[in-house]
Amino acid sequence: MPDADSIAAEKPALDASLRALAIRARDAARALADASTAAKNAALLDIATALAADAALAAASPPASTILAANALDLEAAAARGVSAALLDRLRLTPDRIRAMADGVRKVAELPDPVGELLREWRRPNGLLIRKRRVPIGLIGIIYESRPNVTSDAAVLCLKAGNAVLLRGGSEAFRSNTAIAAVMDTALARHGFAGAVSLAPTTDRDAIPLLCRMDDLLDLLIPRGGRGLVETVVRHARMPVIKHYNGICHVFVHRDADLAMAEEIVLNAKCQRPGVCNAMETLLVDAAVAPQFVPQIAAALRRKNVEVRADAAARALVPELAAAPPPEWDTEYLDLVLNLRVVADTAAALAHIAAHSSKHSDAIITANTAEAEKFLGSVDSAAVYWNASTRFTDGGEFGFGAEIGISTGKLHARGPMGLEELTSYKYQILGDGQVRG
Image 1 (tube, rainbow, N blue to C red):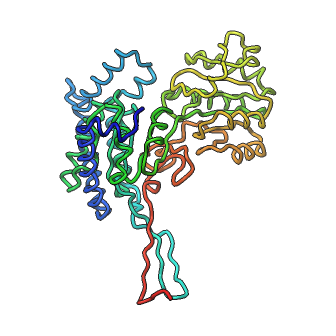
Image 2 (cartoon, one colour):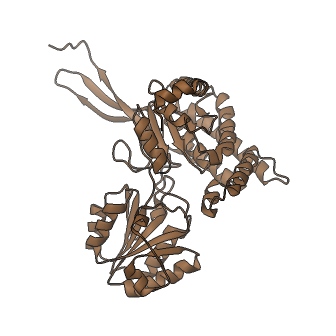
Image 3 (cartoon, rainbow, N blue to C red):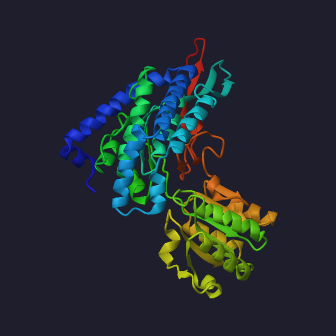
């Protein structure tokens, strides 16, 4: 890919358009940073009302929803390209899903406002009083793919934390994202925050490196998507980046597992919604229980129409399973496809996860407390589970309200990003004439 400066030289109109949006959003960020909690909540509740009104139109006969009409065009285009059923599900909006977006906005409005929170206060021997307070980050750029509800979820969290947001969604949901952003912007304008939610009006891939060079306007970039997107942003960005990488999530069924519980968790982690990043991609089974559990889970997955790709040890127990060549262990399917590997013990499971995990979410199923604690302490992922599905790695499930995404990095934010992760801090120093000698 050409570097950002050469792209800017070749695409001045696109660069100018994006900069104009960013300047407008930056101005809105300043207004939001000074806004009271009551003012921000009023704007959020107005957004929720507008989305609920569109959901009501979507449920009418005939439907008159601007969001649903836009989404229908996106779905038609995606189906024509042969997109999988799981990815179509990620893209699809319904009246219920639009209502859920509105409910999510209301929940964020109900959350405590982190801005202004006193994190620490202390007095120095010279009399200076030092305070550490939460403050908004400023203008956040979010580059994401699929799932149009991200447009609403990400924007309202940024707003509640006093930030404006410049969004660049994927081409597959462009019409849906545009409709959602328009509904939000209209509501925000009534409260003096016009431009606080801005959507890049293009599907041009060159917009991504152009955004990456706007370090004079954007304070933070958050890429959400596959390896190619994240690597492009990291390569070009001139500002800090919080990565929301792929989810190669594992479930390890230990020899001391309740196998009925293990089956239920495995089916939920893989099948409840396979097209999302916290869905399981690889199942590891302890060799001590493999003769019993591999045939059991293979049959259960077959009933759920899951294609299982297994190693030689698993195929020796269930010969009809497909072979899993080595690259599969690093593949995020986002579909009803699952890797299965038999491992010797917990140490072997930990070694596999260390080699192949994307540091998103991994789980152990066992009744053995010592083995569980070993797993919880050793796995270097944002979320590590004991006897629970990886599908719980979610801002709503963690009690954060909506989420900006799942950070798989380690600095500033890790795991589901809620309101606190969308703030920074500053020091306020109060004196009475002190000077440094």
